[in-house]
Length: 505
Image (cartoon, rainbow, N blue to C red; front, side, top):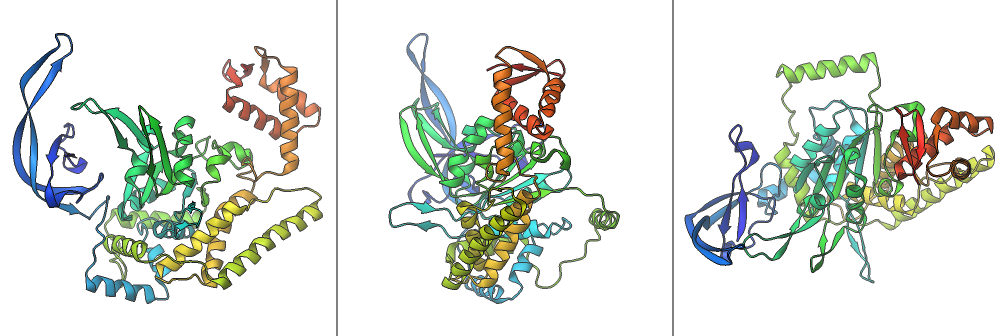
C-alpha cells in the first residue's frame, strides 16, 4: 500500500492538502516511486480498523477508514518530479542529431533560464551540473562520485532562487527545499512510528527522494549548523547511514546539490573579506564550483537589464528562434544523455590535465619565491577530481565516450572563473587551504594570547581588545577573524549591544 497527496497547485484557497491511502497489487506494483505525480483510476472502498483504547485496554471495533483500490495508474513526466526513461525512435534520432551539432554546449546553456539576463558562466556550470560526470566503481569496492555540486554566494536580487526553481523544473528528478524550513531529518532520513502497525518505519528525506537527480537548497546560510553537518556524508560519499530505533541501514543519495546563499551582512562587502562567509571549510570543499554573484552598479548594464525585464512584463518577448529547445525537450535530452552515456577521460586529456595541475602548483611556488610569502595552494586533489567531472559532463552533452582537449580547456576555464577566482581575490580567504600560511600563524598567536589574558567569565570591551592587539603590531583583520571564530564556536558571547565580549568557555 502507498499514500497519495493532493498536488499543491490544485488545492483550493485556504484549504489543507488532503491525502488518502492507495492499495496497489499485481502488475501495478513498483510503477511509481516517492515524489511522482500520478493519475489514478480506482474503486473507493472502506476497510474496518480495530483500535486499542490505552486507558481501558479494550479493542474498539467499528471504525472505518477509506482507501482506493487501484485498477490503473499513469505517471506524469511533465513538470518537476521524475521523468520516464522511455523514448520513441523519432526522439532518439532527434537527440543524436542534436548531439552532432557543433554548438550543442552553447545551445543548452542559452536555453537554461532564458528569461534571466546574463550570468553566462553560471548557466554553463548549471548545464554541467544537470548532465553530471561519470560515477566510477573501483576494483576495491569504493566509488568516486560523478555528480557535480554548485554553490552561488552573493547579493539579493541576482536571480539565484529563480535559477534554482528552473533547475528543479528541467532536471529529470528535482527536489526544491529552503534552508530555514529544512531540518537534518527532512533532508536525509527519519525514523518514525507507523500509526497503524505501531512499528518503526523509515521515511526518506529530500536528498533520498532526489536520488539520481538534483536537490536545490535555497537560503543555505539560514540552515542551523547541526543540520548542515548532516549532509556532509551525502555530498561526498553519496550515502546516508542510519542507526536509530533498531534500524541500521544505508540509503543512496546519488544526487547533485545546487545551493544558494547570501552574505552574512546581506550584501557582499569587499572590505570584510572572509567575514562575508559563514560556512565551515569542510562544507565548502565539497562544492565543485563556488560562484560569488555581486550586484555591481553599471549604467549600461542596468539599462540593458531594465529593458529585458520590461520586455518580459509587456509580453513582448521574442519567440524562440528556430532550433531552440523547449524545457520538455531539454529535460528529455538530459535524461537520455544520463542514461545512455558514461564518458571517461582520454589518455591525451588525462596527460594534459595532469600537466596543467603541475603547472598550477609550480607557478604558485614561483610566486612564493618572488613575494617571499608562502601561500597555500587553493587547488587540491579534490578540486582536480572536480575538473575531471566537469570535462566528463561536457563530453556527455555530445554523447561521446571520451573527453577531448577542448573539454579539459573549458573545464579548467569554468573552474578558474568560479572557485579559483573567488579564492585568489581573497573573498574565500577564511577557508582552510585558501589562506596565506603567514595569516594563519598570526591568527593562532592572537587566539593563544587572547585566551591567556582573559579568563573564563571576564567581560572586556571589543574596541579595547582591538586597540591592545594593534599596539602589538597585529592586524585588525586577524583580531576580528579570531573574535568571529570564537563567537561561532560558542567560546565568546556579545553583551551590551555588541560592545562588550564575555568569555564563556
